[in-house]
Length: 336
Image (cartoon, rainbow, N blue to C red; front, side, top):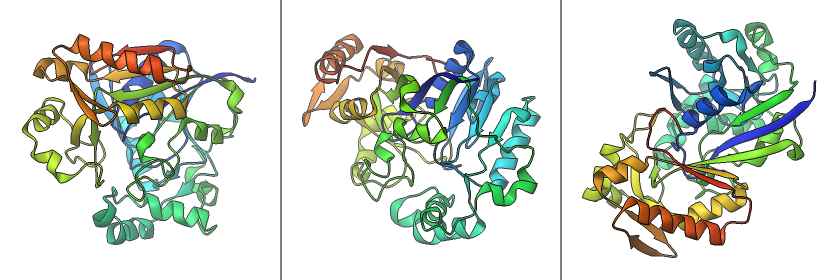
């Protein structure tokens, strides 16, 4: 069987954009044969809802919640202890873990990688201390260990690296955490942009849609000079953070909040080739009666959510690169 088409869901901000919920709904509605992760490790976290129940994963793609083959691709790094913990968690919730497959080319995070991360990077650049960066460092130094080296332990989960039918690719982190495009060195250690999903083994001509996820305000976990500590002292932004329950799925750390930066959003849309923009947490601003965003260095203030959304759409329609076809807004925490 050949690949019919590939859809990709990527984050357009600093992670925590609700990609897991989007992938969950797309999986439920579109009859995909595969849901695949192309980068990152258990430094990412996805929270989703299925039949009113809340679930969280950090490495395993969200397709498993909907009976779809779920692949951890060759560009990912895998902590075996964390992987098996997630397997047991999913089994205990009644999900079919036989659907989960791991590329033999993915690299393995060791205890030494985790210790190096804790000692060198967690406090200086705000990593999650999961060993991700040191693992990628060894990968590119050609000294890393691949899953194939542990095939005896993982034999039930080894992927044959063949895709077919309808494929959905699930992004980790976000555009502005990309190793190339983010505020280096306050970035992740992999490529978060959708073109990197081709590392799963398909040509770019197979890409049908790129779903870009963003919130109607910006959030960031970890250190970043673009999100100074002073933002945490702003009472209005703190109200947004509390109302939006802005805590990292993986770290539990409270996210730093700022008003939406439309310049950065527009750039992320244009470089990623986003066709369908999905903007969530609209209800948070509406409930708080706060309607503001930054554009071209100025803070714009609106009287209603409709005024704010209409203004955002005008900018995006005028300045996007023509790929953007649809904008959806979400106020439901369980779906798009």
